[in-house]
Amino acid sequence: MIFGHISNVNPEPYPQAIRFALDYLAKTNFDVMAPGRYPLKGDKIYVQVLDLETTPKAKNFPEIHRTFIDVQYLHSGTEIMGVSTDLGNNEIATEYNPERDILYYADAENEQELHCRPGNFAVFFPEDVHRTAIYNGTEKIRKIVVKIAMSEI
Image 1 (cartoon, one colour):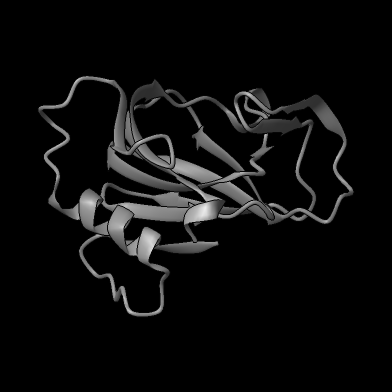
Image 2 (cartoon, rainbow, N blue to C red):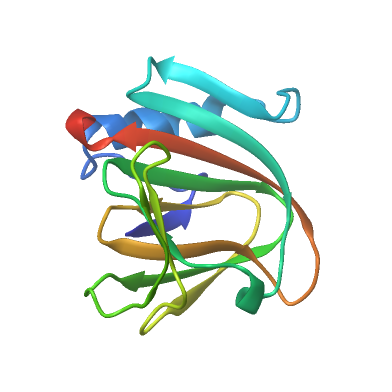
């Protein structure tokens, strides 16, 4: 997992695909984009523009992906993201769906919280359990998620 702010990124240590995603996030005006999915490199790298409302932690299941990395960027609003390492000890709430590349856990062992403001980003790898769009109340947020196929790393 990588956590930072888009205004202060040293891209040198990151793989090219993650550098590509962070550069895209830094240079794109998301205020003028409609919510939806946009290809960046076919189906290997694409972006999702999401307008969401946060929910309390108990109402939002933690998730993992097996074939894609998430680069999640908070464009507006405030959210908390939960993250932990997947050690195989979490109870499965919803079995893995290969079409959506997602598995939901009932809860996340040793979950840590990241308190995010606009400009914060997190990179979640397949071993990172993550629970996003949570907050102690309802908050409207605009979230940008760049999905990167593991084959691009």
